[in-house]
Length: 206
Image (tube, rainbow, N blue to C red; front, side, top):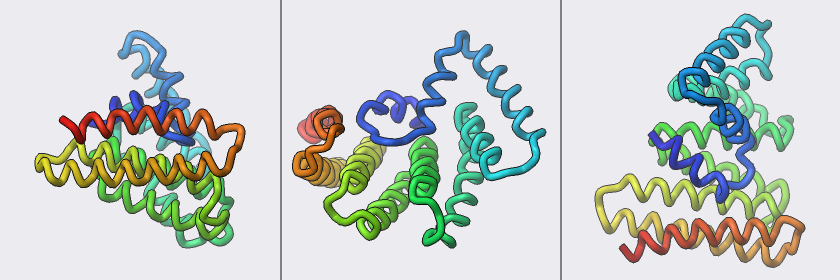
């Protein structure tokens, strides 16, 4: 399970909105109390009239309960729906669904699938916002995190090193964009990238 790893790295993962809810609910103690709350919430949601919003809340709750297959199925179905109609989909909604699916894939250890999703997001944002945009800078960061976690799960030292080096390349591309864009978020995001970069370089050297 990679949920813990993902949560620990939340500070270096940019714009994955669902994780905010996870952290808030995760503050409930003890764990049995948290799980009971989530199960009650899940049943409440299932009893509601079906809607896109309800489905996504169910997926989020299943995710928090670590029912990864159930969450993955819902996010995958939403992804297929939105991919078929991506020209009419709201950009924010499209990216949130894609990022949530990629994050569930990561928690499930399906790093190759997560990587494919992040590549789609980068291509989508490049077409929509241009190659030099905050969205693309964010996407490089998120892909870098995926590649780093993928590398930590590999047995081959050579394969791990390749994944880590690819992660470094995406982090550097992200940093270059943030520094050029000089947005209000640039300094914070460069700092986030640097935190992840230190982890990657540490593991390359080990």
